[in-house]
Every structure is written in C-alpha cells, then in structure tokens.
Length: 57
Image 1 (cartoon, rainbow, N blue to C red):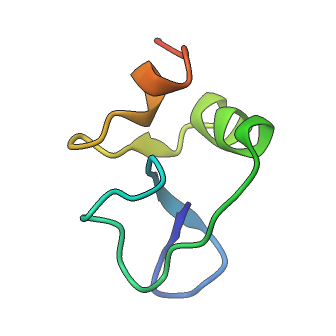
Image 2 (image 1 turned 90 degrees about the vertical axis):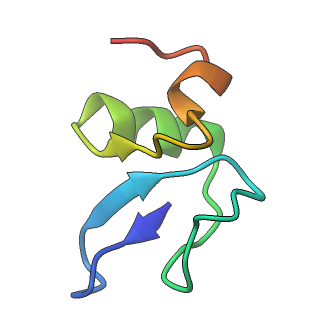
C-alpha cells in the first residue's frame, strides 16, 4: 500500500515486488488491500493488484 505525501491516506495498492511502489509503500495483509480497493483506493495500473487479488469492479 502506497501512502500519500501526508502519510495518512493510501493512494495506490500494489502487488508485492512492484517496481513502481515508492518509498512510502508498506506491506499489508490481503484483506486490508481488498478493503482499500473497495473503499476507492486506486489499483496500480502496472501491477494490477485488483486482478491479482480477484477483485474487479
């Protein structure tokens, strides 16, 4: 999960090992990533965690 510049709000969900995940990223559990996606946090367009996790809008 990549945090915004303020460090409080998530801006992207990434798959572990995504080379686009920046320094503000941290690992989270699968259920947390799915919850973030359902709450409207964008999926990284490169690594497509929504497809990887089985969540498609």
